[in-house]
Amino acid sequence: MAASKMSRRIAIAGASGFVGQALVQSLAGTEVQVAAIARSALAGHLFPIADCYRVGDYSTDAQLGEALRKAHVAVYLAGRAHVHEASTAGSLALFREANCRSAVGFARAAASAGVQRLIYLSTIGVNGSETWGEPFRARDLARPDTPYAVSKMEAEHSLTATARSSGMDLVIIRPPLVYGPGAPGNFGRLLRLVLSETPLPLASIRNSRSFIGIDNLTDLIKRCCWHSSAPGRTLLAADREVISTPSLVRLLAAFSGRRARLFRFSPPILKATAVVLGAQRLATQLCGSLEVDIEETCAALEWAPPLTQNEGLRRAVASHGGAL
Image (cartoon, rainbow, N blue to C red):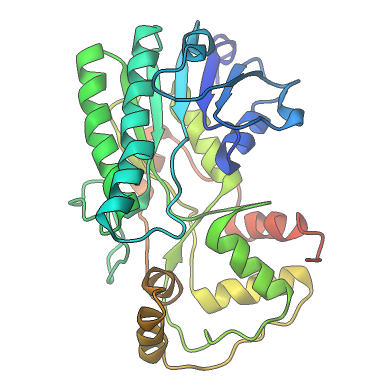
């Protein structure tokens, strides 16, 4: 990046979350000025790095004007996570409130403050939950099948209209599951199971899944902040490598000095059991394939993931110190 670009100001909404904290930390020591915005208290170690703002609502809070003042770029990472979602109308309403209404309100506040570019972290779930021989690409027809993914797709559409009417640049990023030190959600749960050497019925699974390490994702977000080819694009994000679920377990075990305790169990029976137990989404993530093609992203932004998947997984395991 040119020095003139590095001297600019970035406002980060959702700075207290997993991706938000990592993004703020990755900007430490650079000439970028950071405004960290969150609805919860921000971690103490972020205060020396960023100007911190606690807001009650991402779309209407009076603090937003001050946080967004003089910001050239705004990054929206806030929202309701998809963990434990239920496929109900009530659940969809909650996701729409957190992931669509708040995002659009924030975008309008950013445009009013003179922000030149908005980066919105969406999800690969907008493309769908599973691939069948062909990877997801940005040009694919959207097929979201969970309340979380539907709300993200609706946010993408609303933000596109807001950006068009305001003249603000918009960049949309769709990542798969994000892993790394301190990762929440299903990756964190799987890692804890591996560290405890819990027997897992995953040895018979033959799938291919894309993930993205937190360092690769934050590097891509920073690339999108300044690259001239980013505006107007929907960019798919992932590591270069794909991996099967049992191979992932074996790697996590090897990197932590544990045994990978995998045993054979019929995948169809495993999926059927998960449906009965109300864990169909988890079964899809463990047994199904989800491959992401990032070639268009890499070509458009002259970018490549800086870390290999093995390096990223080693860092994730090392953050646990080899112990629960």
